[in-house]
Image 1 (cartoon, one colour):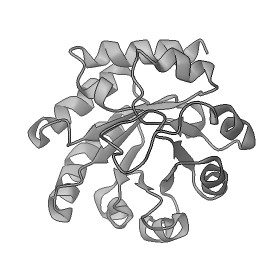
Image 2 (cartoon, one colour):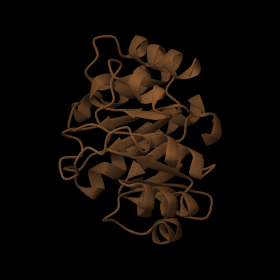
Image 3 (cartoon, helix red, strand yellow):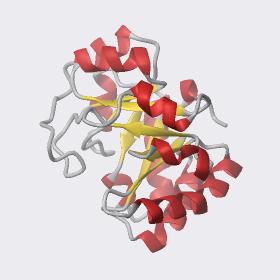
Image 4 (cartoon, helix red, strand yellow):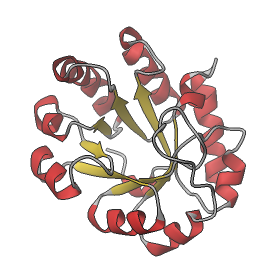
Length: 208
């Protein structure tokens, strides 16, 4: 499995943007494009259908050596064979998620301020930091901008993945503000050439 420390591009299979029937194909395209981590996010699926979909995706991502993260469902990590889970500020604590997911699981935490990021980085295997820009993916959280990225990056060795409204168009500015790792959701999923989009994002991140 690819180590988190070397990961730069995090993709999310968000069923708010793609049909459930095409999830595996989008996963294949992400793999082909070189995404380092893949998360399954499906807020409207039943737990049972979410688990079924995760089980379908696990062999594909394991064969590619890519960590596969479940959004919101640490209790399904061991039974599905996923690599770990991601929890939000209003969800379970990192310790609770780890207890459900198992000791070998990767646990990520969403953070929305420098203070939250410092706490999260001390507990989780990686954190998400944002939303940097306004985004429908995080409608309940105001955009926090780019000003604190460097402060958070310099506060910890834990991998920090900037998230929220990041696209190829603004990625250079995000990188210039100090980001080394990013999550791209709608820009990636809605691209007419997803693998090429991934490769260009990775290229920009590699020269930062």
